[in-house]
Amino acid sequence: MSILLPLYVYPWAGAWDPLFTAAKQHPDVDFTVVINPCSGPCIGSLPDQYYLSAIPQLRAYNNIRTLGYVATNYTTKPLDDVLKEIDTYATWPKVSNNTKLRVDGIFFDETPSTYDTFKYDYLSRASQAVKNGTRFRDRFVVHNPGLIEPSLLASPTFTQQSYINISDITVVFEETFDKWLNRANFDALQAHSVRRSKLAVILHSLPDLSKRVLDFVVEQVQEAADWVFLTDVRVKDEYYHSFSGIFEDLVKSVDGGAEE
Image 1 (cartoon, rainbow, N blue to C red):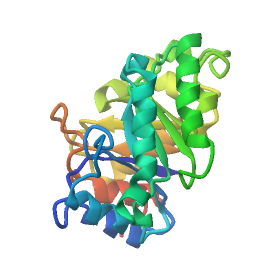
Image 2: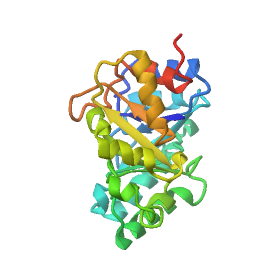
Image 3: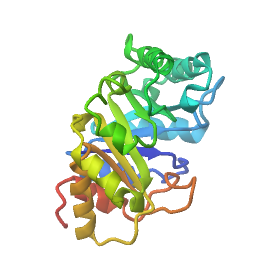
Image 4: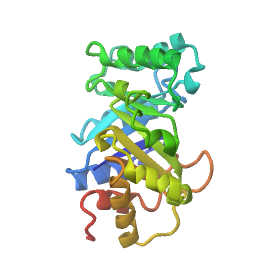
């Protein structure tokens, strides 16, 4: 199991230290982190000096993969704008003259959940811009529709009637902890037949849980997906702008669940 981390924390000096510490102390845990300096890559310029200093530090850890954030607005954003943002991330190393600014792929946010041929073509072309060539080290693509309806996820034709074959990971559930506990959601996530290596679950607004209960939550998520992120932040639009109090325990739980 691995961690998919929306790293929307502004990189003031020391702000990313919890990630650096976790990556160092848990070398067997893989982190895929999403960098989002300007709700995207800062079109027309590099990110500011704080990002220019912090992003290369991620390269010191073999278990950290970096993705650039691009929103598609559920495919209503002009495709040319999406391709331009992808290209901006790809040119960071050249423009900055720093190869350590190279990202490994793209995290497409606000992607559609229901199948449509136009939307499939749109996302396919965006994915090809990441997959083709060598501009991105891993050529890694993540889609985040936020929520796949339980009936769709449980459908025997979901793999054929979805966008899952043009992404490496799809976030099938990004919701509150309480909604995850809803019977329909929980059962669908446990019962689907999609390869778990293709799926991620992100839960926010967790209650105050003991480490033992957190271990159990991680085990249950693992029945649905190989990628996870949990946070106890409850403030809307702030879920991923800080390292929550459970981040360290989350990493420990993913790394076998044992108390230290």
